[in-house]
Image (tube, rainbow, N blue to C red):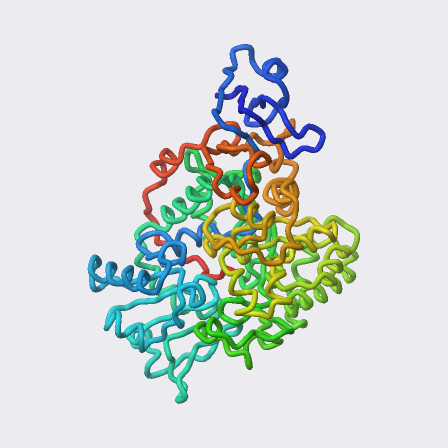
Length: 565
């Protein structure tokens, strides 16, 4: 249908000038009118159908400003075994997944699992000794859900030649070691994850399909636009193929990792800018809370939870958790800023946020960018202080925040990982919004499952998965939360002229919901069903999308294994 009028019980536009409507008129993939059915019919061809979507509410499609969709598929879809806590809640469940894989696969096939979390699984991170008891001489690796650690057995160490010659620690990462310097089967940060994983993922039959399955999962959650915040040009053929497939459900913006040789270079894509574009440069100023590598000025607690996660308060956090020196950041910014790229720094702890702010401010001054629409970003800002958030706003920085950290880990953050003063206000969305900065929400998939409605519920209620409230003063209004997942997320991607609200001239990207978010108990927002999505005026058909994928004919791409939470 090139011309169509879509009707729902209500249309929530996220346009302050016209917040509600009865219908939307679409022509040529764009919105041409918003209002009554009669008014919308005058804006399209006379024979254009009026389609009742059956939705209780039609909204602009949700926007994921910080994700890892292709990697999300490669690291969570078969043949990789998903063991994340929302799939395998206990360590016993995790071992059951291991045992099923051992029993059902060729003994020569390497086994890869993703999603282990010592805090939520309530089990210490495995090392080679424990994995050997489970896998014997089978090649196996287990990715930590944070994306900042990996665990592997003796068979892998020997196969890689690391038993006789243990590798040195790469820049930005390190291996766990025994007192004699040999590897203990644990590794930390992106360079080590790549060293362990690259030889293993060569056996993947169809990484393109794995990526497509994750895009489909995002679509079922209501997303119509996303980003890849750890892009490597090696992934370009995969993304080109995905967006060229019939009924591709998402538009993608790419942030290239500063660890590549090409991060300052421009790129173009056959699908065109509206579907696929390179947008910026990404790096990590610290690591992950869940493995003790978030750089905080305050200590991790000595608790049952942190001991189980092997987080030593004497060494965790602090300046030692910073992944870059100020000189390192300056060098990267001196290459990227003159090229006009939108910068993005992962910063969880307050020390990491402070380092990002210092480097950003100096570079903005060096290149006369203060007061311009640069939209440089800080990701997560979980432990940021109000003063830091005010400073970020004054510099024109955009804040993309992680409600899932509160939802899944909030009961541990407050009193088990950090003291109440710091843990209860982790992910300070209320303070961030009060600064006037542009605030967006993200899932960081696959670190958390795609669920923008859970994000919205979490920041409105400050409730964890268990229903406990932490930092009630950091709750934000529903309208602000919806904006943070639609129009403000689109602004974060520099896409607000195309998506994020239902306005004349914008792309016809919508999500159908089973309930009006404004009409239900805020604690029930995550129970709203996504009935479907539209992209460019066409209702997404995920069966057609998955069936239309090209048959793999080229060697499998090797995506980098960096992501952040």
